[in-house]
Image (tube, rainbow, N blue to C red; front, side):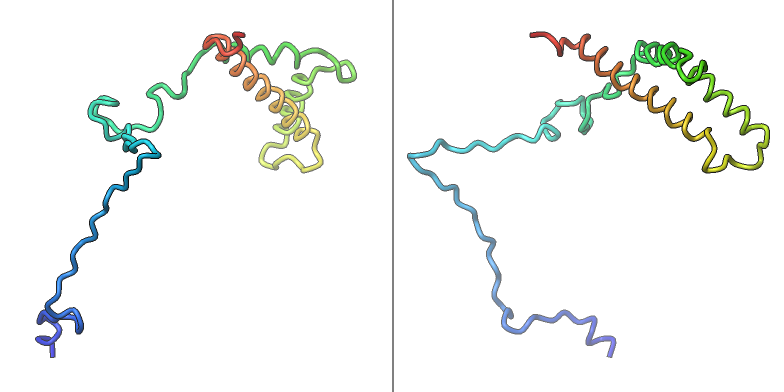
Length: 144
């Protein structure tokens, strides 16, 4: 029984015939220009030093000036505008209040969540616009 499964067999109907591959012919016309194949930049020899990459080598473009701009968020958030208290002060005060009963997490109705979200939203907006503005200026994006 095992010998019958191991023996080579032919498919009925294709016994001795061989299927020839279909050759694609280039179509040409006097109305259109001859087409050129686009080169894949990943396959061009020496395009990226022998490595296949999809992004620039320095895609993050880390710059410490944006971190300085983020520290600049402390200045506007430290203005005492909310009942004589600053957003930073209220946020840090709520952290202290929540740490007083440390193993227990903050309640959903705690002011901590409002100050946390508001303070970090302002920080991330400052970071985003700082990155756009600083990098746009250094790469001459805003030139007319």
